[in-house]
Figure (cartoon, rainbow, N blue to C red):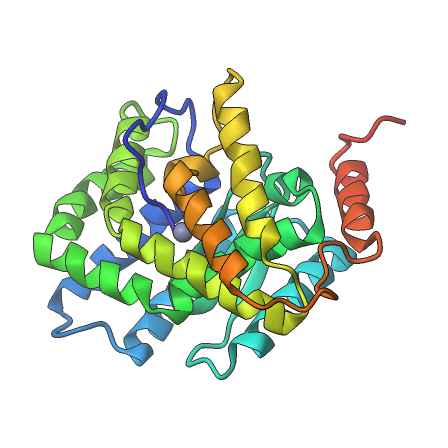
Length: 288
Ligand code: ZN
């Protein structure tokens, strides 16, 4: 999930779903007394945390309610999971109606993908690359690891009171953006560079087993890096997933070292394009 890069960029005028997700997660932890949990976060504890998060999220996020689009994302998630092998969590994939280019994993495999990210994908393997990366954060227990690190620094506790004030006061409350930044910062420091590398490696390893070329993971980051240099505000996904040269080079090297089946797919016979068209139509973004 989120990791703040060296330059967090301009302060957002409102909270994006990603920041809100983090804030909710921290709030859930605070209210449910995560502080008192002893030892590493167990599978069962992560399940509880994820379940609570998903319940809160239901009233908080704008879900994109279209069966075709949801089925497409769900099926892509299932294909990735099947290739990944047995998992301790019952993963769920959600589509949020958000223009912001982002995706994130909440505890226990609740994975949220923005319509903005689906629209930004040039081909199926780019979208699958991001989804496999997010699954990788859950499968490699990065959330449990981050959670422990956070707990040890006591940052959850310190943020809890501030977050409660923000939620009581609403998002528009003065200082809300600042607290959002702090929350993002806290959660972000969780996902170390090493965790990002592991999640990338997970995607590169698992995607070919799902019949999908892992090239999309790298090309997507290249596109994002190019956009960042092109003026305007950089996609928010970049603040959590810096598209560094090192990261792109690592991905390329890992892919080059694999003896990949030439039949692996970058496209899915126009299905992604249908899904994108549908999102554009249903959100009123399509030209008549
Ligand atoms: Zn990541």
